[in-house]
Image 1 (cartoon, rainbow, N blue to C red):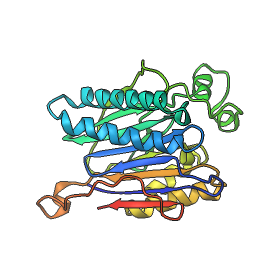
Image 2: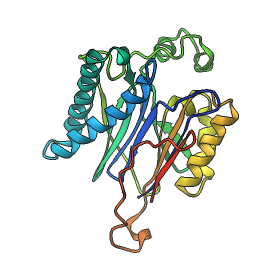
Image 3: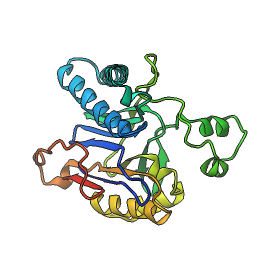
Image 4: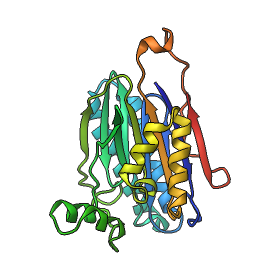
Length: 263
């Protein structure tokens, strides 16, 4: 596979509270929330705790391992908030895929995963948000949800409750598919039709990430923006043999921008 990741603070926020991991095996986007610096602590810690669990429990089936890792991250955040008043109220979304033969999906919150195939982009996740519930129940339209004053209310997040429900799935994939993981700094401001156009036209993951982030910045860039793009290739197209070993990279703040992990 080939992949790239890009994260930017945006034009309005002072700090980037998004974190990500992209290493060829685990791909995660986490969008932190909370006062002071709690949001960035929450998102980075959740990824660290998940990866620690993943590395120490390889014998567990993938979906059970995802659930266990997310639950471990959730409990770690709750313990930290209980021990430090400055971290009280922190939480994070957590949307991820685990590549292990098949692709396994885990999801909590309103960051998103999409799959693109033969020109069509479709969501793999459903937002755990108040406005999504209102859309599902027919009270408002998807267009109204984008501008609704309560659009930032999340119904599920890590660090909020010891009883955490995690959406799990096995993703049906084929060579040529492209996966997109993103925080709501992208999906909340760029319509799915435009996301589809960008994902369809960009030839390389790096280019796709840059175009997606630029589109969010053009819409005002009022939130942190994080994207991961993963291309699934036919083994025959790679000339045989395994590709280079990818490095694991956590979020890094570089003049308000995080840009790493390309293969």
